Amino acid sequence: MDRITLDYTNALASTIGPDHGVQESELAGMQGVLSEAQEKVESRRTLDLRWLDLPYQSDVHQEILRYAEEVQGRFENVVVLGIGGSALGNRALHSALNSPFHEMSPPSGAPRLFILDNVDPDLVGEFLDTIDPTKCLFNVISKSGSTAETMSQFLIFRRALIERLGEEGHREHVVVTTDAEAGVLRPIVDAEGYRSFIVPEGVGGRFSVLSPVGLLSSALVGIDILGLLKGAADMDERCRSAQWNENPAMVYAATQWQMQECKGKNIAVTFAYGHRLRDLADWYAQLLGESIGKVKAGPDGPMHVGPTPVRAVGVTDQHSQVQLYVEGPFDKWFTLLEIGQHDHRVQIPADFSDKDALAYLGGRTLSELLAAEREGTRIALTEANRPNVSIQFPRVTAHTVGQYMYMMEYAVALMGELYGIDAFDQPGVEAGKVAAYALMGRKGFEQRAAEIQRQREKESRTV
Image 1: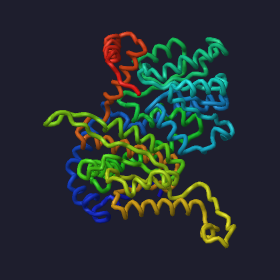
Image 2: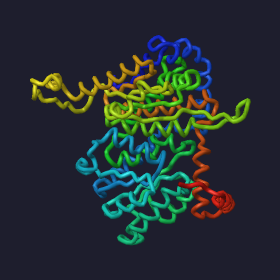
Image 3: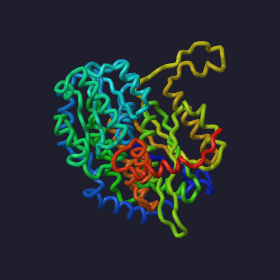
Image 4: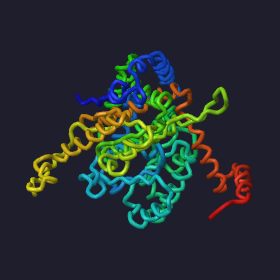
């Protein structure tokens, strides 16, 4: 069956000992708080957590598919202008479900995909020097329309298009994903006549990958978005189970909480064993870090909570990080992402069979080698009493990726309740945005600019 599984055997005390492992009875003992967390999350499904119902918005899905068919073959490139949740999910879907060499040789009729999630002038400048904007469709993604990074890029590429195509001609090269009514972009869309899609209410950026934010660019480059959504819907059914050990989101959320709060493991490493899964780990890093890294009131003052997410790629990082993971501090726990069956079978030639260091490789496949490397890491971690769980993808398909993304979103929502914080705000991010607005001279932020200037006038130390 095309169903992802979560194996938590190596996080249990029965496997790695009570100092670093969780007793299964401790997980079972969380049934009450997990059920309460689930009830709180579900009670908000039709209110402010509408991302829970994204798999079922069939009218929106069909609108996206019609637009993708309408513009097929008209553009060589799709360019996503977005950042954070408006970019990481798009990239994760593309790298998981399309060829790693898609931009070099896209399938017939499919455009290349570029995701410009940085305002580094060398990145944007090189793009302008290299890619003809008149051969691009620019997908501008910002719910508020006030995201400085995205809007600055929009202004730059809009001007480049107008200079080459004129006011009228440039419009077909822009499609906007933004709020239905509010924000800065909506009146611009209406005035300019840009084609647009809606970021639904109750869908925050890091939970938006299954909305038009992630689905539009995916459909444009040929990803099976209906398969993706079917996977998410199937996982939604599993996540509604009330029994903790039948619900993978409950198991994962409980394990994360136990590892940090009871075992002192403040670092959560996602070890992606598969090139196609690497950006799923990056996507999850934002989901976890931005949702759970918060300050809350405690009995003795502010409490700073949340794990630090780290991404590693197997086998690459066996040669850069595993030494630390196996023999370093006991402050980490691990999630291994693994693939049961790869799309390609690459056999290793049986050359130099007289060399013992090479002979054992001959006649085997790269899939076998990757699996052995993964198992070697799992064994090394487990024997060193390092807790680890495994999420297996039978194959990397739209259906299994949809399952994974929905499972992790639901798990993080449950984690918010376990940690006693709001998993859906981001005050730390907003503080940085406000400072940037002040530094750039945005109207309304003069007081903050003056505060920053006073701080800068204090004596500094440099070497």
